[in-house]
Image (tube, rainbow, N blue to C red):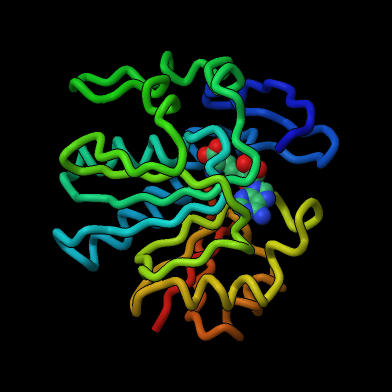
Length: 226
Ligand SMILES: C[S@@+](CC[C@H](N)C(=O)[O-])C[C@H]1O[C@@H](n2cnc3c(N)ncnc32)[C@H](O)[C@@H]1O
C-alpha cells in the first residue's frame, strides 16, 4: 500500500516488507518464501492439481503485493508441467524499485532457463503475458471489491492483510463473492484461520477445512465449493 515500508529479513532468509501504520507484514516472519509456498502452492495449487490432472488451473490472487506468490506459482507450474492462467489483483502496486530491493532474484537460482524474478516483476499491468508453455499472467490494478469477471476460477489465493487491518476484506459478503467467482470444485486458500472467516465461508456454501499451518502458525484454511 502507499504507506512507508520497512524491509525485514524473515527466518528462511527471504525478505519482506512491513507496513508500520497497519502493523502488518506482506508475509510471515517465519519465512516469506516458506509460508507462501506452503499455504498457496502446496495446499492450494498442488491440492487442486491432484484432483484435476492435466487441466488448466485458473488462479485468482487477492493482493499481488511483491509478486512472490505469483512467481512461486510460475516456478511450480513449470516444475510439474501443469498450465496456470493467473489473474492477480492489486489496488496499490509497488514501484519496481521497491520490489528489486527485496533481492528475490538472489533467492531463486533457477537451474532451468526460466524468467528471473526481476524480469517477471517488470511485466506490464492490465495485459496478459504468456511467459512460458505453462504460465500466463495478468496483473490488474483494482480493488477486489470492484473486480468483475465473466470467467470463473479454479483456485483463489486469498492473501489480504489481517482482519484487524482490513476487516472489510474478511466479511461474509466477500466470502460470498469468492464463492460466486469459483467453478464447482473450486478451492479457496488462505493463511487465515479466524473463526468468523470460517463461518462466513460456511454460510456462503463452502465446505471448510482447517489444516495444519506453515511454520509458526497452528492452522490455515482451505474451502471447497461443492
Ligand atoms: C499480505 S499482502 C499480499 C502479499 C502478496 N501475495 C505477495 O506475494 O507479496 C496484501 C496485499 O493486498 C493488497 N490489497 C489491499 N487492499 C486490497 C483490496 N481491496 N483488493 C485487493 N488487494 C488489496 C495490499 O496492497 C497488499 O499488496
